[in-house]
Image 1 (tube, rainbow, N blue to C red):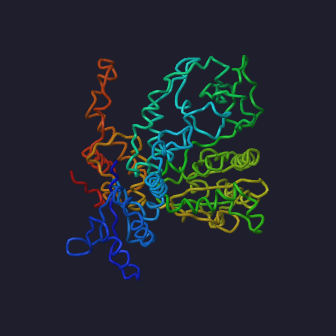
Image 2: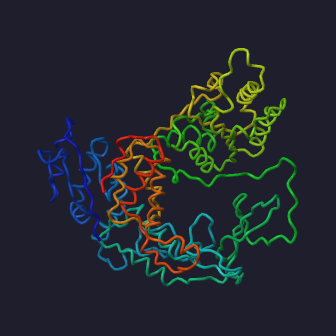
Image 3: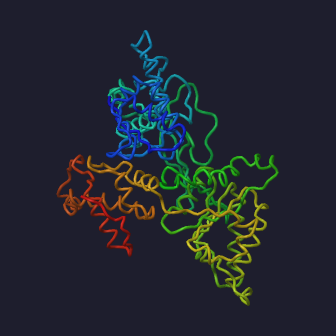
Length: 537
């Protein structure tokens, strides 16, 4: 299959520039810097690259760390080093195929669970060769219960998951790879499984609490071979546990189950430049505290996320808690403020106590300026000032609570009490800015993930047009474009009334003009007049 992409880099004073230009000139479609182009540009594909793989490696190694170099693939901009790393394994695998004396079966060689390509791994095709492993992804787990004992396989979701893996690993860089490889295997799989056959299949239950009553709901299945797995993941999954005949008694007063958010870093776009900092400062100390003990230093326990609204400060806090499997306690002002004497302080102490019981834990103060503004002279005895005093005291003794981290967000750091910013309290401050060009593209890719886009939609061009907007505004543009497409294609009233039950979903897709209309709506609904709102139809 064809895999077309473009490599380009500007003129440079680097001693390696002439060398890079020489490598680039070895490709068939090379356009040097000149009157018609401000870049050296190589337009190529996987076929030519594999024929000239040594030349390709030399070029990519030379420009790998140049800020003036980039690779453009499917309207997305990728750094040369990252692009080369993503295609390297597939390219080397194909080189092995080309040199093999036994090409028949090469792609599946040694892979009993192969989907037609030795590089395409991540979802297990054959499940009966070894005991069930919770860490593996099995084909049959892509489904849902359509009755008490019938588990129906969602082949579309399974297919999309394999496509995602192939794109992540750039398997389509291989000229002989065809998506039909795994589509044929999926078509041959059963469409439903009889979960009542307890000799072969076991059920996976979700333990949940509804109205203080603990109960279990079957949410998945697993294949039994020799025995069920001995160890069970904490809190979430319980296997082969019968539904209780009587409700479980309420937990003791004040006791709570651990709450871990579902948000991940993959759900947030536009923050790739600060993710590494976040992981070093927050995630690493929670996961590997012994590193800090060995170095003889104390990790930051108070982190302030600040910046303009709509850029993902709350989502970042949730994603951190998800990554480290920490109990997450979100706090906003009304949750703790009470004008009754001592009640607000009592609420704060209870929050830190809960975090200590359910550690590792993250306490997140959303818009902390609503409860911790600067205390003015003569106001230290007033009720709202005593809340700040209590928070300062708790932050000073936070290490006594164990593996507890406090994260706060604000749009106005200038309003916060200066005492909160001192060492040992919120002493690490991280600005969450509006996304740059690459960040805008990331936000759009997250917001349009799974969205049926027309061929005329150019996300890179859209990203260029929305620079200066917040991540929330960019997400609004994508969501509103999808709703515009829905209104354009579907008679909503007829659908609601049931007059038109059948509808061909293939007719529903989002066009470039829908994004233009969405931007117009955003302009109308906000005060912004930024010139970056110019999209051409």
